[in-house]
Length: 116
Length: 270
Image (cartoon, rainbow over all chains, first blue to last red; front, side, top):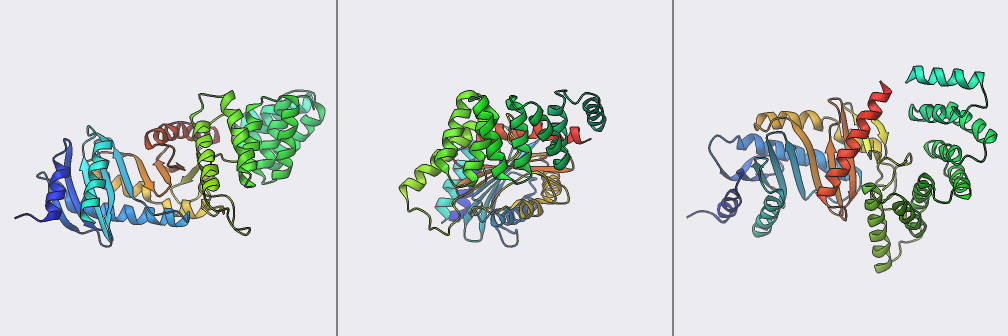
């Protein structure tokens, strides 16, 4: 019997090119639930996602603008998606560069909606 | 660049009637030497009052110095001479926006877009202003004591025919160029630069740790705004912000251009 959170994350990792999907505590960057291929540095991804989310919160705070809802770090060999997954939670996905960005974004937003 | 300025200064000294005052004043302005730029431009405009580009340059120098009234007068002079002057319409749009006159700002921006229909940043600015006007028309007028501007400024003060980066900062969190405002209209450039200091290093470390290679861009959606963060050089960071009416894909293209311009500007600085 898998948890609802696990099922939601498993849906995300079924998308081609998604290496891992995580539910992360935004306060301390710890992995709450994960769905990942082997050899994925999920703890590092979780920690970084929380740290970057926190740092960019100071950006929106400085602008007196609403907080971040979706974040995408693009790199030469892959991408990191971060979506606010509810109070104190982030949904994180690590993908290749071959993914459909729009599809992953929508899947994460849908997952966040299911978890809320 | 310095040699160019020395050469042009020498040329102008030998021949005060030379039109070299235009590139000289602009070069000084780009280097941030606004007082000498102003002096050169004023002398040139007095000598050649019929040259619209002289007034336009003078207006941009005034705008960079924060003298909006003088900039307004100079850009108005440009339009008297050349009614379809792109830079003047963009400049007046910026001044109107800062004054909270969205209708007048939209009028000048729309005219500018007619004159430069391929300019994606102008199209984005027009969309944004129209959205703001529609939002204002659909909701309550802000209270008299509420600043009328909201969101990142669509066109920076030094707007020319180029897309100027919204905010360029160095690795120590200091502003190099551009400006970004809080949603209540106050300048937030320094605070934003400080907030973003170290982001590049952190992104690079994370990308390495996760086996993602080198980081290229950070895109962020936050309420009514989209943001794009880039690293034009190893020591600089660029933030481009637009309203959500500018889709993420288009914002990425705007950021591409802004990165190119930032690199050129940094090269000019030496």
